[in-house]
Length: 244
Image (cartoon, rainbow, N blue to C red; front, side, top):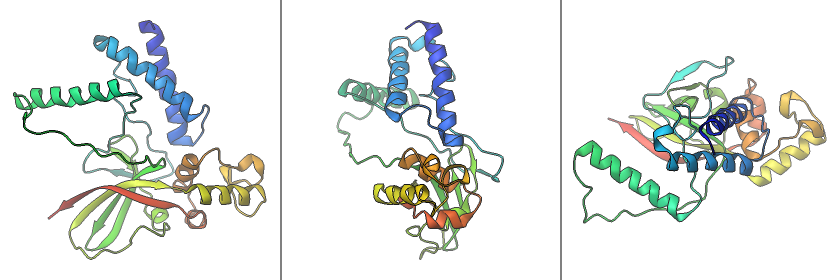
């Protein structure tokens, strides 16, 4: 791949990511998009001096639409990079070791063996929940990592997200809003048969969602929280910050 081809691919992948994360419009399958991003990664590994500042490996997909109030995250919300084989995993491990050396001016401790945990990837929409005085006060999308969309009223419709917790401290919980395959199939059936609205507020087969990820993301961005409640979304947490 030439530098020009690489830059064109970066621009196209960023455009496709924007369509997905902002407008829930999936022009290509997730597998195809992953393959395109992998080609970018391979070029960057071979040409580290030519990495674009707009590379999807160093930027966060998404943004903030005009219909929601903005919310500034107290700490940046990052996204995950994909790897496809053992060598890419080893390259990633080396990168954080190099970062440690650069940051602290010494080798990482040799007597510490890193341990890794594998878990299934839940593909939905990243959400930040903010609890104060024991109550869920704010909920926001990741957006561009620094600023997200305030979607508190919609998140309050998700049954397995606690609205009150037995802790008065300021707590931020990050996780993923998703829809199970069973609920996704039920939703699309209801949309096709006219019992629920789907994409673009319409009913019928043309309004069915392409995949569960788009269904979850599009639902959280609804202006009518009653629609969110009817679609039976779920939530899984993966990180917590506590401010005393």
